Image (cartoon, protein in one colour):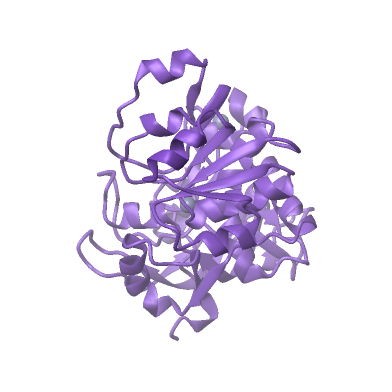
Length: 354
Ligand SMILES: [Zn+2]
Ligand SMILES: [Zn+2]
């Protein structure tokens, strides 16, 4: 049976999100049906709602930081059963044939992953859905291979944002081999930045936060940062030159990066995680002088996402969240545009109006 689903959707780039109803597909043999309990609010939701990339199809239900409880499983599903605590992140399928898929890096699928919302959805056609719809809703049906298990020790609400923010920071920390003795700088203490600080500190790194003001200094220290730098403080930036092995840059607004490159030690890397739609100046001199690199990184594969959830559970790491009712989503977007959130909004889906 198709599943009647209540949601919040955007119907146009200049309209507020509003209540919306639709049907999820009848779960197939490989599917897991999930009652969504919490959905994190990611900055990319805002980009899609506002059509910043120019390819949004409406109506669209955003949300790719999903935590909930399994309500039913198909005949072939072995890893999950009714009542399990589960999560769904940024993707719900991929081609499963290409090299990245076979290597467990489905986020880099060559034909492209099926994103949790806004991707063509052949499986949804039977219930009139042509694109995938995300987590600002009370139910979702997902192939078991793209469902994550949320460890019992993690609270579901504060675990939801791990499914995008948490894996987006965890993957580069692992890729660049952060461990005891590593010196890691995190630029921007927001939804991504605060996860990077907690995870890098738990991996044994010496963590420094770079921010535009000292408003969040006490928070940074509580999360595990040892040092705090204000990036307009020229003397402090000079003193920090060549200190870091890795810079996790989470700032999505276009900004000058040349000054930050000088903070990297020889062979150091700055990883860009913020989704900026504009170009940024990169100068060759600071790169070649110390064989530095500027890199990017996109979420993580399913296997790595499960590893991240288990790592966070083992180290008592979750997101700092502001839990809100879904009908406050538009106000949350306005506050996010002013970076006024500590540190992630999460929708309490049980408060969806009947
Ligand atoms: Zn996201
Ligand atoms: Zn693939």
